[in-house]
Image 1 (cartoon, one colour):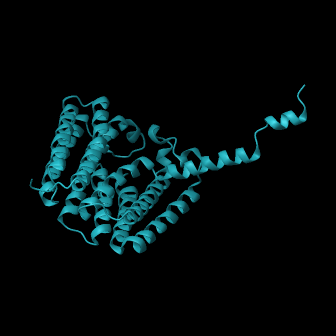
Image 2 (tube, rainbow, N blue to C red):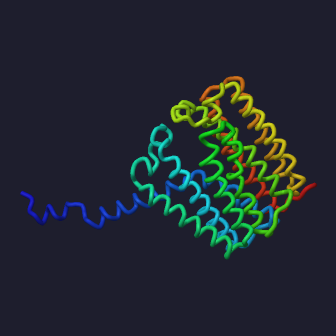
Image 3 (cartoon, rainbow, N blue to C red):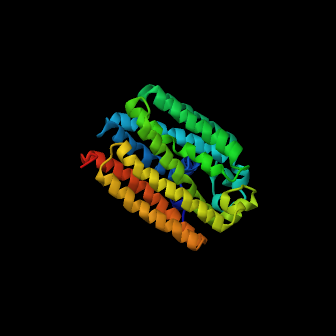
Length: 313
Protein backbone atom coordinates (compact mmCIF):
# COMPACT_ATOMS: atom_id res chain seq x y z
CA UNK A 1 0.00 0.00 0.00
CA UNK A 2 1.43 3.40 -1.01
CA UNK A 3 1.62 5.99 1.71
CA UNK A 4 0.81 9.67 1.38
CA UNK A 5 4.55 10.28 1.38
CA UNK A 6 4.97 7.97 -1.61
CA UNK A 7 2.15 9.67 -3.47
CA UNK A 8 3.74 13.03 -2.78
CA UNK A 9 7.07 11.86 -4.14
CA UNK A 10 5.45 10.72 -7.39
CA UNK A 11 3.27 13.77 -7.93
CA UNK A 12 4.47 16.32 -10.51
CA UNK A 13 6.25 19.15 -8.78
CA UNK A 14 4.76 22.62 -8.94
CA UNK A 15 8.06 24.07 -10.07
CA UNK A 16 8.35 21.51 -12.88
CA UNK A 17 4.84 22.24 -14.15
CA UNK A 18 5.46 25.98 -13.98
CA UNK A 19 8.76 25.54 -15.81
CA UNK A 20 7.09 23.53 -18.58
CA UNK A 21 4.35 26.15 -18.90
CA UNK A 22 6.98 28.89 -19.01
CA UNK A 23 8.91 27.21 -21.79
CA UNK A 24 5.72 26.68 -23.79
CA UNK A 25 4.97 30.39 -23.47
CA UNK A 26 8.48 31.28 -24.63
CA UNK A 27 8.15 28.90 -27.58
CA UNK A 28 4.82 30.50 -28.52
CA UNK A 29 6.30 34.01 -28.55
CA UNK A 30 9.30 32.80 -30.56
CA UNK A 31 6.89 31.21 -33.05
CA UNK A 32 5.24 34.61 -33.53
CA UNK A 33 8.48 35.88 -35.08
CA UNK A 34 8.47 33.14 -37.78
CA UNK A 35 12.00 31.83 -37.04
CA UNK A 36 12.36 29.94 -40.33
CA UNK A 37 11.85 33.14 -42.31
CA UNK A 38 14.34 34.96 -40.10
CA UNK A 39 16.93 32.25 -40.83
CA UNK A 40 16.74 33.20 -44.50
CA UNK A 41 17.13 36.88 -43.63
CA UNK A 42 20.30 36.14 -41.66
CA UNK A 43 21.65 34.16 -44.61
CA UNK A 44 21.39 37.41 -46.56
CA UNK A 45 22.72 39.85 -43.97
CA UNK A 46 26.08 38.44 -42.83
CA UNK A 47 27.51 37.62 -46.30
CA UNK A 48 26.52 41.09 -47.51
CA UNK A 49 28.40 42.61 -44.58
CA UNK A 50 31.47 40.56 -45.53
CA UNK A 51 31.28 41.77 -49.14
CA UNK A 52 30.84 45.38 -48.01
CA UNK A 53 33.85 45.07 -45.69
CA UNK A 54 35.94 43.09 -48.22
CA UNK A 55 36.70 40.83 -45.30
CA UNK A 56 35.30 40.03 -41.89
CA UNK A 57 33.70 42.99 -40.08
CA UNK A 58 34.11 43.29 -36.33
CA UNK A 59 32.23 40.59 -34.47
CA UNK A 60 30.53 43.26 -32.38
CA UNK A 61 29.17 44.94 -35.52
CA UNK A 62 27.96 41.61 -36.89
CA UNK A 63 26.30 40.75 -33.58
CA UNK A 64 24.58 44.12 -33.21
CA UNK A 65 23.35 44.06 -36.82
CA UNK A 66 22.14 40.47 -36.65
CA UNK A 67 20.35 40.94 -33.32
CA UNK A 68 18.80 44.23 -34.43
CA UNK A 69 17.76 42.79 -37.78
CA UNK A 70 16.36 39.64 -36.17
CA UNK A 71 14.25 41.61 -33.68
CA UNK A 72 13.02 43.97 -36.40
CA UNK A 73 12.00 41.14 -38.73
CA UNK A 74 10.50 39.25 -35.81
CA UNK A 75 8.40 42.27 -34.85
CA UNK A 76 7.12 42.62 -38.40
CA UNK A 77 6.28 38.92 -38.60
CA UNK A 78 4.44 39.04 -35.28
CA UNK A 79 2.33 42.00 -36.41
CA UNK A 80 1.61 40.08 -39.62
CA UNK A 81 0.30 37.16 -37.52
CA UNK A 82 -1.83 39.60 -35.52
CA UNK A 83 -3.36 40.99 -38.72
CA UNK A 84 -3.87 37.58 -40.32
CA UNK A 85 -5.20 35.72 -37.30
CA UNK A 86 -8.70 35.49 -38.82
CA UNK A 87 -7.57 33.76 -42.02
CA UNK A 88 -4.84 31.76 -40.28
CA UNK A 89 -7.59 29.98 -38.32
CA UNK A 90 -9.13 28.74 -41.58
CA UNK A 91 -5.99 27.65 -43.44
CA UNK A 92 -4.42 24.22 -43.09
CA UNK A 93 -0.89 25.63 -43.27
CA UNK A 94 -1.40 28.08 -40.41
CA UNK A 95 -3.88 26.51 -37.98
CA UNK A 96 -1.16 25.82 -35.43
CA UNK A 97 0.06 29.38 -35.13
CA UNK A 98 0.04 30.79 -31.56
CA UNK A 99 -2.80 33.27 -32.11
CA UNK A 100 -4.98 30.53 -33.57
CA UNK A 101 -4.34 27.99 -30.82
CA UNK A 102 -4.74 30.62 -28.09
CA UNK A 103 -1.19 30.19 -26.82
CA UNK A 104 -0.83 33.98 -27.05
CA UNK A 105 -3.63 36.56 -26.87
CA UNK A 106 -3.93 39.10 -29.71
CA UNK A 107 -3.22 42.00 -27.34
CA UNK A 108 -0.10 40.38 -25.92
CA UNK A 109 1.12 39.48 -29.40
CA UNK A 110 0.77 43.07 -30.62
CA UNK A 111 2.48 44.50 -27.52
CA UNK A 112 5.30 41.97 -27.87
CA UNK A 113 5.75 42.82 -31.55
CA UNK A 114 5.89 46.57 -31.00
CA UNK A 115 8.25 46.28 -28.01
CA UNK A 116 10.83 44.17 -29.85
CA UNK A 117 10.52 46.45 -32.88
CA UNK A 118 11.34 49.52 -30.77
CA UNK A 119 14.27 47.67 -29.20
CA UNK A 120 15.49 46.68 -32.67
CA UNK A 121 15.40 50.19 -34.08
CA UNK A 122 17.09 51.62 -30.98
CA UNK A 123 19.81 48.97 -31.07
CA UNK A 124 20.56 49.56 -34.73
CA UNK A 125 20.49 53.35 -34.33
CA UNK A 126 22.88 53.52 -31.37
CA UNK A 127 25.02 50.39 -31.80
CA UNK A 128 25.29 50.34 -35.61
CA UNK A 129 24.28 53.55 -37.40
CA UNK A 130 21.13 55.60 -38.11
CA UNK A 131 20.90 54.50 -41.77
CA UNK A 132 20.62 50.84 -40.83
CA UNK A 133 17.92 51.70 -38.29
CA UNK A 134 15.94 53.74 -40.82
CA UNK A 135 16.16 50.91 -43.37
CA UNK A 136 14.95 48.40 -40.77
CA UNK A 137 12.00 50.64 -39.89
CA UNK A 138 11.19 51.10 -43.59
CA UNK A 139 11.16 47.32 -44.09
CA UNK A 140 8.88 46.91 -41.06
CA UNK A 141 6.50 49.62 -42.25
CA UNK A 142 6.42 48.22 -45.79
CA UNK A 143 5.77 44.65 -44.70
CA UNK A 144 3.05 45.60 -42.24
CA UNK A 145 1.43 48.57 -43.94
CA UNK A 146 1.87 47.87 -47.65
CA UNK A 147 1.97 44.08 -47.86
CA UNK A 148 -0.02 42.76 -44.88
CA UNK A 149 -2.69 45.45 -44.62
CA UNK A 150 -3.12 46.51 -48.25
CA UNK A 151 -1.72 44.18 -50.93
CA UNK A 152 -2.13 40.67 -49.56
CA UNK A 153 -5.93 40.46 -49.60
CA UNK A 154 -6.51 42.63 -52.68
CA UNK A 155 -4.04 41.92 -55.50
CA UNK A 156 -2.45 38.86 -57.09
CA UNK A 157 0.74 40.93 -57.36
CA UNK A 158 0.88 40.98 -53.55
CA UNK A 159 4.00 38.88 -53.11
CA UNK A 160 5.77 40.57 -56.06
CA UNK A 161 5.61 44.03 -54.49
CA UNK A 162 5.75 42.64 -50.96
CA UNK A 163 9.07 41.00 -51.77
CA UNK A 164 10.70 44.39 -51.24
CA UNK A 165 10.31 43.92 -47.48
CA UNK A 166 12.20 40.62 -47.57
CA UNK A 167 14.98 42.28 -49.54
CA UNK A 168 15.55 44.89 -46.83
CA UNK A 169 18.22 42.93 -44.89
CA UNK A 170 20.76 43.22 -47.72
CA UNK A 171 20.52 47.00 -47.57
CA UNK A 172 20.70 46.95 -43.77
CA UNK A 173 23.79 44.71 -43.84
CA UNK A 174 25.59 46.91 -46.37
CA UNK A 175 24.65 50.13 -44.59
CA UNK A 176 25.82 48.69 -41.26
CA UNK A 177 29.36 48.38 -42.64
CA UNK A 178 29.64 51.38 -44.96
CA UNK A 179 27.06 53.85 -43.66
CA UNK A 180 25.87 54.32 -47.24
CA UNK A 181 24.38 52.49 -50.23
CA UNK A 182 25.49 52.00 -53.82
CA UNK A 183 24.92 49.94 -56.96
CA UNK A 184 26.07 46.64 -55.42
CA UNK A 185 23.59 46.55 -52.51
CA UNK A 186 20.75 47.69 -54.73
CA UNK A 187 21.50 44.84 -57.14
CA UNK A 188 21.48 42.45 -54.17
CA UNK A 189 18.14 43.98 -53.18
CA UNK A 190 16.86 43.34 -56.71
CA UNK A 191 18.13 39.78 -56.54
CA UNK A 192 16.04 39.00 -53.44
CA UNK A 193 13.12 40.95 -54.89
CA UNK A 194 13.14 38.72 -57.99
CA UNK A 195 13.75 35.52 -56.00
CA UNK A 196 10.72 36.00 -53.75
CA UNK A 197 7.89 35.41 -56.29
CA UNK A 198 9.08 32.04 -57.67
CA UNK A 199 10.02 30.95 -54.15
CA UNK A 200 6.64 31.81 -52.65
CA UNK A 201 4.44 30.96 -55.64
CA UNK A 202 5.93 27.46 -55.67
CA UNK A 203 4.78 27.01 -52.06
CA UNK A 204 1.42 28.62 -52.82
CA UNK A 205 0.77 26.06 -55.57
CA UNK A 206 0.50 23.41 -52.87
CA UNK A 207 -1.80 25.57 -50.73
CA UNK A 208 -3.77 27.28 -53.50
CA UNK A 209 -7.08 25.89 -52.21
CA UNK A 210 -6.23 27.22 -48.76
CA UNK A 211 -5.74 30.72 -50.13
CA UNK A 212 -8.86 30.48 -52.29
CA UNK A 213 -10.93 29.45 -49.26
CA UNK A 214 -10.09 32.70 -47.46
CA UNK A 215 -10.22 34.92 -50.59
CA UNK A 216 -6.51 35.75 -50.54
CA UNK A 217 -5.54 36.21 -54.21
CA UNK A 218 -2.17 34.48 -54.24
CA UNK A 219 -1.39 33.93 -57.93
CA UNK A 220 -1.85 30.11 -57.98
CA UNK A 221 -5.31 30.48 -56.39
CA UNK A 222 -6.61 32.97 -58.98
CA UNK A 223 -4.72 31.92 -62.12
CA UNK A 224 -4.12 28.59 -63.84
CA UNK A 225 -1.10 26.52 -62.89
CA UNK A 226 0.27 27.05 -66.42
CA UNK A 227 0.09 30.83 -65.99
CA UNK A 228 1.76 30.55 -62.60
CA UNK A 229 4.50 28.31 -64.04
CA UNK A 230 5.21 30.77 -66.87
CA UNK A 231 5.55 33.63 -64.42
CA UNK A 232 7.80 31.53 -62.18
CA UNK A 233 10.06 30.85 -65.17
CA UNK A 234 10.10 34.53 -66.17
CA UNK A 235 11.14 35.72 -62.73
CA UNK A 236 13.73 32.95 -62.48
CA UNK A 237 15.33 34.02 -65.76
CA UNK A 238 15.52 37.61 -64.52
CA UNK A 239 16.90 36.42 -61.17
CA UNK A 240 19.71 34.42 -62.72
CA UNK A 241 20.61 37.32 -65.04
CA UNK A 242 20.87 39.72 -62.09
CA UNK A 243 22.97 37.23 -60.11
CA UNK A 244 25.51 37.17 -62.97
CA UNK A 245 25.56 40.96 -63.42
CA UNK A 246 26.21 41.28 -59.69
CA UNK A 247 29.64 39.62 -60.01
CA UNK A 248 31.46 42.50 -61.76
CA UNK A 249 29.39 45.25 -60.10
CA UNK A 250 30.14 43.97 -56.57
CA UNK A 251 33.70 43.00 -57.53
CA UNK A 252 33.07 39.33 -56.78
CA UNK A 253 35.36 36.57 -58.00
CA UNK A 254 35.17 33.17 -59.61
CA UNK A 255 33.98 31.39 -56.47
CA UNK A 256 30.78 33.42 -56.50
CA UNK A 257 30.45 33.36 -60.29
CA UNK A 258 30.76 29.57 -60.46
CA UNK A 259 28.15 29.19 -57.70
CA UNK A 260 25.81 31.63 -59.46
CA UNK A 261 26.10 29.79 -62.79
CA UNK A 262 25.67 26.28 -61.40
CA UNK A 263 22.94 27.01 -58.82
CA UNK A 264 21.18 29.29 -61.30
CA UNK A 265 21.16 26.54 -63.93
CA UNK A 266 19.53 24.16 -61.44
CA UNK A 267 16.97 26.83 -60.54
CA UNK A 268 16.13 27.33 -64.22
CA UNK A 269 15.90 23.58 -64.80
CA UNK A 270 13.52 23.30 -61.83
CA UNK A 271 11.38 26.17 -63.15
CA UNK A 272 11.19 24.54 -66.59
CA UNK A 273 10.17 21.29 -64.89
CA UNK A 274 7.27 23.12 -63.25
CA UNK A 275 6.24 24.56 -66.62
CA UNK A 276 6.31 21.11 -68.23
CA UNK A 277 4.41 19.54 -65.34
CA UNK A 278 2.72 22.20 -63.19
CA UNK A 279 1.84 20.06 -60.19
CA UNK A 280 2.25 20.58 -56.44
CA UNK A 281 5.01 17.95 -56.42
CA UNK A 282 7.21 19.72 -58.98
CA UNK A 283 6.42 23.10 -57.43
CA UNK A 284 7.52 21.90 -53.99
CA UNK A 285 10.79 20.61 -55.45
CA UNK A 286 11.36 24.10 -56.85
CA UNK A 287 10.46 25.61 -53.47
CA UNK A 288 13.01 23.39 -51.73
CA UNK A 289 15.71 24.27 -54.23
CA UNK A 290 14.94 28.00 -53.98
CA UNK A 291 16.02 27.91 -50.32
CA UNK A 292 19.19 26.00 -51.19
CA UNK A 293 19.86 28.44 -54.03
CA UNK A 294 19.78 31.56 -51.90
CA UNK A 295 21.91 29.86 -49.24
CA UNK A 296 24.52 28.77 -51.79
CA UNK A 297 24.56 32.13 -53.56
CA UNK A 298 25.06 34.28 -50.47
CA UNK A 299 27.38 31.74 -48.88
CA UNK A 300 29.53 31.91 -52.02
CA UNK A 301 29.72 35.70 -51.68
CA UNK A 302 31.20 35.32 -48.21
CA UNK A 303 33.62 32.54 -49.20
CA UNK A 304 34.68 34.51 -52.26
CA UNK A 305 35.71 37.49 -50.16
CA UNK A 306 37.17 35.64 -47.19
CA UNK A 307 39.22 33.39 -49.45
CA UNK A 308 40.74 36.45 -51.11
CA UNK A 309 39.37 35.90 -54.58
CA UNK A 310 38.82 39.03 -56.66
CA UNK A 311 37.47 39.90 -60.09
CA UNK A 312 39.12 39.23 -62.46
CA UNK A 313 41.57 36.41 -61.80
